[in-house]
Image 1 (cartoon, one colour):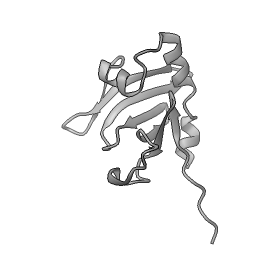
Image 2 (spheres, helix red, strand yellow; image 1 turned 90 degrees about the vertical axis):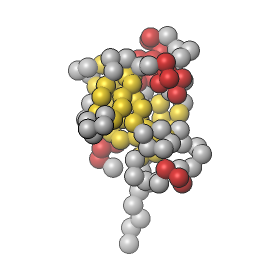
Image 3 (tube, one colour; image 1 turned 45 degrees about the horizontal axis):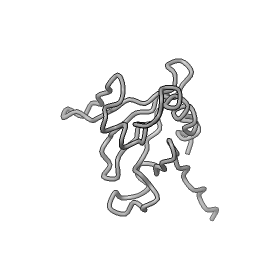
Image 4 (cartoon, helix red, strand yellow; image 1 turned 120 degrees about the horizontal axis):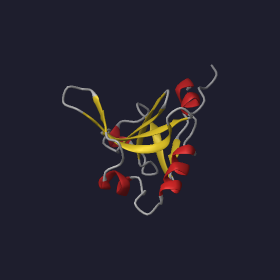
Length: 117
């Protein structure tokens, strides 16, 4: 039986993220900063415990940038208009200028390709 190809990792600003569901949070290898879940217009990023922390907008219509994201008590996703200080530190964006932040978002793996896997 042919072996399934490995699931692609997402790299953002030098940090690696495993596809959500490939590991239990308690067994996530140390090389990963957390998890990702690709969307048609960007990528949700989760911490090592599986808690939503950020959304990387990555499409030509909206642009390329990061925002803080979280899951509300009613289960819906809440998006801020930018990143909070804690998100900046978590994604190591706190030392980057605006154009460098945009370039980091532009460099994230193609969300359409990630959805296909």
